[in-house]
Length: 163
Image (cartoon, rainbow, N blue to C red):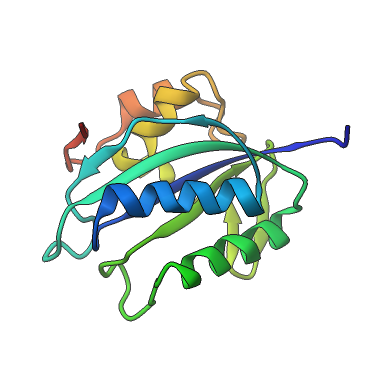
C-alpha cells in the first residue's frame, strides 16, 4: 500500500439544497481524491465577511489521498467548478466551497495555496467541525490543538449543529 497523505478539508455552501450539495461534494471527493475517513456533523453559521446572504452549512472531512498538495487543490477546484461554483465576488454566496485546512503537518506557501489555512484560527465555523473530528490535532504553526483553538476563538458568529 502506498503512503497516504492526510488532508483535512472544510466544505461549505449556502445556495440551493445545502445538505444535498455537501453530500454531492463528499461523493466527488471520495471518487476523485481519496478515502474519506471521517466526516463531521453539519454546522450552520451566518455568512462571514459578506453578511447579506443565506446562512452556510459547513462540514469537516479527513481524507486519505495519494495526491500531493497542488494536484489535490486542482482536483478540488475542478469539483467546485463542476458543481456550479462561480467566483463572482469575495465572500459571496456559493453552491460549494472546498478548502484544504491541513495537509499532513506541512506548512505550504504556494501561489493560490496556503496551508494551514491562514484564517482558520479566527473562524469558529472552521474550528467547530474540525474540533469534532480531530480535537487533539495540533496546528503545526500555532502548536495548539483544535479544541484549544476553538475555546480561544473570538469569532462572534454563532455556529450550531444542523439537524
